[in-house]
Length: 278
Ligand code: G1P
Image 1 (cartoon, protein in one colour):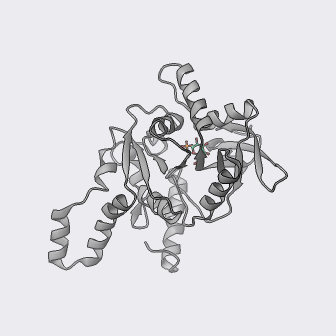
Image 2 (tube, rainbow, N blue to C red):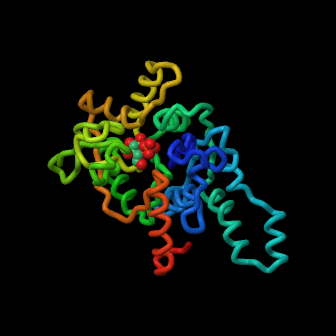
Image 3 (cartoon, rainbow, N blue to C red):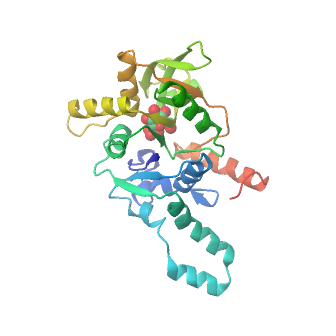
């Protein structure tokens, strides 16, 4: 099962994210959340849960079947558009898509905690900001988890001047060709990042990560955000191994309006070159 957190305020995309959920911004012909489900399917997962907020009803309706509109398109003979329209509801059906509501924007950690409360075993988390056309990173994450039983996530190098936008990890090889995370800082102040290795939003969450989130949730100041990175940091502080997989594939970062604009242009070039469907 994969959890796709999509309940954030989309602060960096205000004011437009007041009326259009950031996860519905288009990259090529599909919104970010649909790309996320494509990745889930490519990786071989069979179910997905989107964590959404009461202020984003369109995120649910995007995946609803629309028989009247389908009929109108069929009558016009517009079969290509009809196929695109139907695919949104179809992928939701194939992945037995469910929604969990986060009533207040209390952070990524809180979203994962809510979705995890219904889970028995370990599960995956995929942040829809980054669109990744491949799936090899999931095979590597899941193999690493299967071999060790430990929680893990992808990391990738970023330019130091952007490190303040990310969770930043200090890692060292653990002797088995794996990376062990030694230190983690969520969004370090500019110029103070302890490394240039950022946490990429692809995680395997285990019961001990959920336990850390629960403890942090009970202890937090009312209304303050819960960071997923801090739950991993709590495990590291207790000498419980947290592992990382270096990501080296193709990626479209949509974390800021500038990155989004540049990703949209690169994605279009990729489609034009025939490397991907729109
Ligand atoms: C989240 C995580 C951060 C991670 C980033 C990757 O931040 O908290 O650790 O590096 O995603 O995109 P957000 O971009 O949601 O603020």
